[in-house]
Image: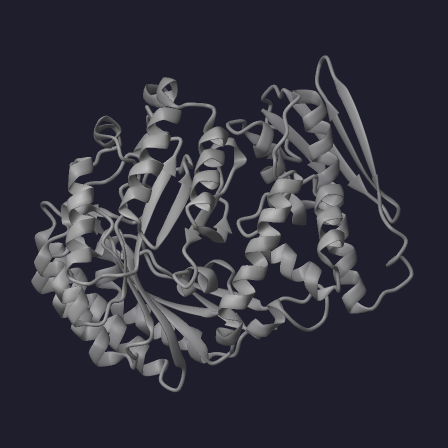
Length: 505
C-alpha cells in the first residue's frame, strides 16, 4: 500500500497516474490513516518557489526538489495563472516520477506523459510559438519523454493538422452508432458488448430503442454539417443481413450525408461477415470497413476466445475486395497471451501480404472488467514482457511498406506503458479517428454505452491564446442494455437538452 500526504488534491488523478507507472497493482490512499501498513509514504508540497516530493519507506528516503520559474510569480492575470497552474502540475509529476524512478530503477519511454492524447500537448506548444527543436527540448527536459516518442507525436500532430484542418468548425459534427453485440466476447475486451447467441429478442428491442434515438438525434442536429459516420461496437456485422439493412436504411433516412462522406462500419470479426452483409454495406454508401484479425495465429485466436481461423480472416478480406471495397482497415494487438516475436512477425507479414489501406497496431491493455484481467493469474505466464520489441518491429516494417503513422493514443494499464498507433497509406487516413481522438469536433453518439462529446470553440486547439483549449462536455448513455431500452425516452430528452444548451466556457 502507498500513502500520499498532500493538500494538492486537485492533482490526485495525475499523482495516481505517475504512481501507476511504477506500482500498477498497489492500493494508493490520500491523506488517510486507515490502520493498514503502508510500503511507502509520499509527501508532496508546493509553494511559490518549488515543489518538494519526499518518498519514505523503512529502508529508503528519497527527496526531490523541482524549482518553479519566476515568470508568473508577480503576474496575476487569468492567462498567466492558468499557465502557472499547468507548470505546478507538471513539476509535481516530474518530481514524483524522478523519485520513484530512482527507487525502482525503472522508467517509461513517455516519461511523465500519462494522458491519453500526448499529441494535444504538441498543439498547445505550437500555439505558444515553439518550433520543432524547442518542442523536442521541452518534451525531453520537462516531461522526460524519449526523443523517439517526441519526434513521433510531432510528426503525427503535423500530419493530423494537414488532414483535418478544414473540418474543425463549430457547426460540424460526426456521428457514431454503437452495436453492442459480438459473436463471442474476446478475452481482453471490456467494451459494452454482449454475445449474439441467446440474445435474439433483446437485439430486436435494442434496435427499436436505437432507432428512436437516431430519429431524435437527427432532429436536433438539423442545421449542422455531418462530416463522417462510424458504426462500431461490439461488432455491427454480428447483426443479421435484414437487421443490418434496417439500421443503415434508418441512418440514411434520418441523416443528410453524401457519397463523399467518410462512412465506416466495423466488420471486425471474420466469423460475422457474409457476402449478403457486405452487399448491404455497399448499397448504403459505406466506403470504409474494418476487418480485425488481432493476430494471425490459430492457437492464439483460440486462447483469446475467437471462434475463427486465420484462413477465415483471409477469405473475408478477399470477399470484401471482390465486391469493391477499396478502403479496408485491419486491427492487430501486440502482447496477447502466447504471442511472442515470431507470432508478431508472422501477423505483420500476413497482414501486409493482404495489403489493406490502413493498419492499427494496438498494445494489449489490461482493462478493468475484461476476462483477462479478472483471471490474470491463469495467463500471466503466457504474456511476453518484450512487447516493446514487437511494436518496434511493426513500426519498422509498416514504415518500410509505405504506411505512415497518422493517429496515436494511450490507455491505462497498457503493456510496457506504450501506445496504440494507426498507420495508413497516403490518402486513406480515417478522418473520424483523428477528429474523435484529438477532440477536434463534436461527436454525437447513439446506442448503449456510447459517449457523446460536445466540443465548444474547436478551433482553439490550433489557434487563440496559449493554454486555452476547447471546452469538452460529455453525455454518457447507459451501458446496460435493459436500462438503455427502458429509459430511452428519458435518455433522448436529456440528450436533446444537452446538445441544445450553450457550451460551457
